[in-house]
Image (cartoon, rainbow, N blue to C red; front, top):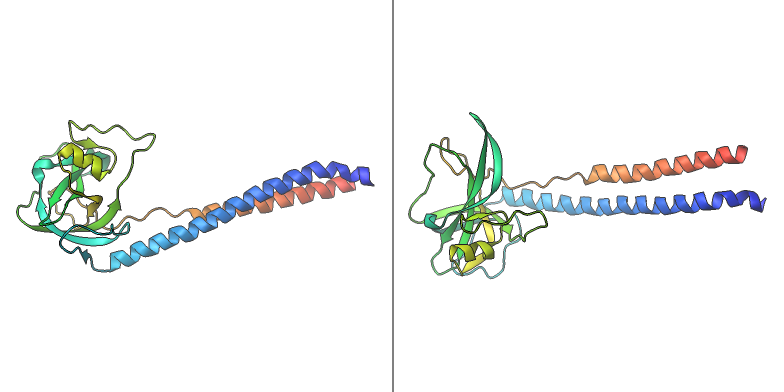
Amino acid sequence: MTSGYRRFIVPAISTVAMLAVLIALGTWQVRRLHWKEAILARIATAEASPPIALPPGPVVAVPPPFTKIAVAGRFRFDLEARFGDDVRDMPGGAAMGYGQIVPLERDGAPDMLVLRGWVPEKRVAALDEPAGRQIVTGYVRPAEGPHWFSPADDVADRRFYTLDPAAIGRALGLSNLEPFILVAVGPSEPGLFPDPARQLPRPPNNHLSYVVTWYGLAVVLLVIFGTWVRKTVRS
């Protein structure tokens, strides 16, 4: 009797080990699901709320990501920079473009880099470059660091692929910058560029499907093992 059950030991241990891995992955995705839902709820709350007006002077504490703020200042279009490569659909077909970054000069406070929106590489219309004091509304995007596959920044051409205010500021000759990016949000003006973001970003939330996948595989594994045991005992 004892020797007969020995053949179940290795398959049972293997099944338990795989089951533990699958349950752990499913549980991890449950935590990720709650984390992502909290982020989306915070974004929805920020989008429904009026923007927070930053007081004069340096920002003492960096606002949390996706916080909607309003900032007053004057654009330094002579220090315009470009961010990334982005293809969008245009009336004449797909067009390559970039994000326009312009420093916002503020009275008695550090400058702030503003990602004003998308600009096509090939365009006929002039860029919208408002003069004088402006109030810019947008959301906070934290500083980023380069990744393994990030293209190298072209400092000479003021073309950047990582939103790092410190690195961009050094390239533009600015030493006193806020440590985050302001992404402008607003309506689109036909025929005018840059084309700003319409709303706060919504990161994808696919974690529920991953939960179902991992827990579902755990159930399937148990069914397969139970079926095998039943057939083996009968044989």
